[in-house]
Image (tube, rainbow, N blue to C red):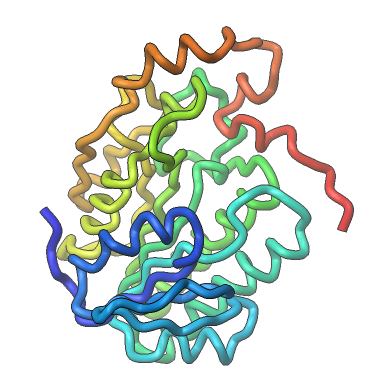
Length: 269
């Protein structure tokens, strides 16, 4: 069930793939949805407003956050790559966001973390939120930083955060790895709704996955969030197996949960 929990909700990264998928869905969670990105997000609907901002620009981020009740933070670099852009968008950017939230009294954030925070665990392992981070690249390191920063802002300032370690959120799984990591768009919205509406969120780490039979992640420590996935990659299994080769078990992308990210780089700045 989707609950209208906030008067004004901020969605960063609104021009990205997940931002576009959530834009129409999130209108049920608030009276006004503020959209933000570095680039144009299109004409706002009657229930929307647009405040463009570069996350590395502190005054712009401050203006972006002013007046909102909660934040769904999807903005930033979403792929592995050179450290410079990741530093600006994902590390400096998340600091700017939390500083703005502190200044303006925003007390709940849904932070799009990533499965790449733990990408160097093996696919034969099952992990939970208590396992130490093992990032598989600069991108994963930046998300691990965001998780630590958000915990500090909870402990020091009481800003509640759900760090959603998003698996693979696409219309359907693209390969055999995604049979374990897939998160449907509807389940992503259900998860964000749960994070926005649970009475006490505190600082929580939640693995973002649908109800897949094969999984590497145990969400038992996030039961208080109330997320119950309704979709599953299992209905795609036969088709995925038919169009993909058997895995090469000597390939690091098959050995580790992070997939191809564990092999990316080095990069020239």
